[in-house]
Image 1 (cartoon, one colour):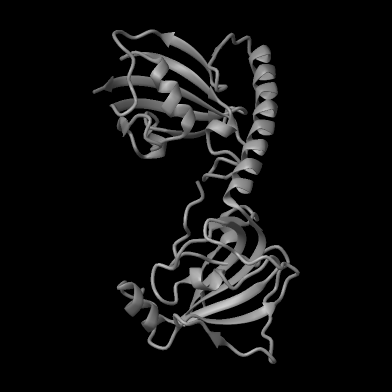
Image 2 (cartoon, rainbow, N blue to C red):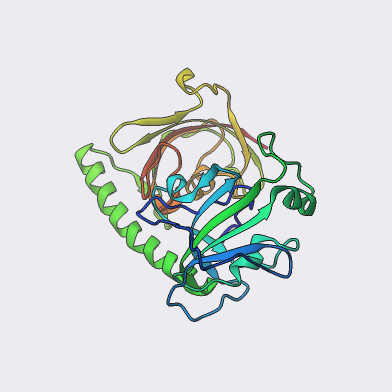
Length: 292
């Protein structure tokens, strides 16, 4: 599911050679809800967005002269998907999205005081009266939600095949003989534990260390270097962690210790996450301490 991007953090990225120069001939116009807009470039797209469509965008969000968010910097140079939804208030950025077509570059803006009044949110301390909230937006593509989900599923299936090949080579090189789930998780149980297995909806308590296939450690709650030495607790099967964890921990009994080898499609997929790059296979040493 594509998530809605917050208007106070949405930013259109210029970083891949894309430039937004002022156009003397183009004056700002205003939507019915009070959102000002100005075309920087008109694309070749002819299809208008409809609710539920998914647009791929580059965005730079500014308050006054300060760049708050640049999506290309946040997303490793890739556009961000944004579902077209009903405006949450008059002048909401979604109102502007409905004006766009593929290839369009538009600057949207609203006085910060007006935005604060419409949303009921206080201004950031560095914002001054008379400053604008502005968004430089480029719409790179526009697809139906069904089309986007189909493409994502196809990409995930292709990547899963690549990941399995990498993992099989890794296991052969390191003389590992794991078990495998139907979804594609590989695992080795080192200590069986006792009793029943946890079920979706139960609160679990876990110790873990995560590494990449090259041996680089990226997170741990038992290594003081990561500054959070306490058991991780969460509700299993509720999407609070990656899919590989939600499934992988159901394979274990209380007190069990195991290694989970998680393909990227069951981890963070094509999105980066801190030190974890896109399409990265993850390895976790886990201990299921308790559940209830």
